[in-house]
Image 1 (cartoon, rainbow, N blue to C red):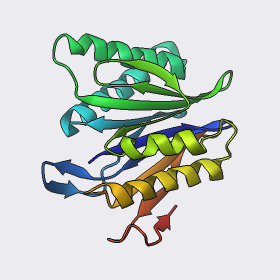
Image 2: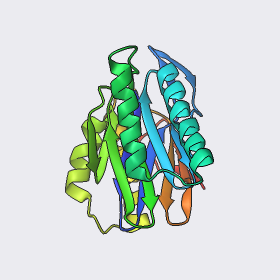
Image 3: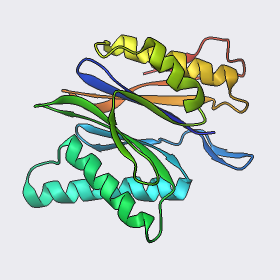
Image 4: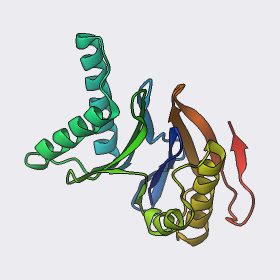
Length: 207
């Protein structure tokens, strides 16, 4: 029951995901970080088979570090998204990865951006998006409430509303979520959300 969502605001991007590691009817752990910090100004939120997700996101992260080490310059967010899409497309015809990605980043010349890349290498630049079962509830909510000029607080409030809807309507809803942000100051964890058994009750927040 994975949920990954992302939003682009005025000069930042937010990526959030549940922290449950689930297989079939079992919850193996509830502190799995599915939003990887690729480098100083990039985030990769991923959903899919746990092994593929961990292996592929680490593969992309290490290749970005290698490129920067060799060339003394980091890849832009657009270049990273195209590289990621290319690797998924190549693997699709050999040993495909079952992984869906929301890639967010900040570049000094273009600002914040968000890219949608799914397991069959479909590639789009977007302003808002979601993967997993949570997408069934989040996308319509985003269509209604999203604005391109949102502040950080407004974007996080939209994410919280999406999480609340997931908690209210999904049969087996995740208990915990992590929210990360990327802007001119870099990529970092913004907050965590931990919920009680009742989705109508207020969340506890840890920064």
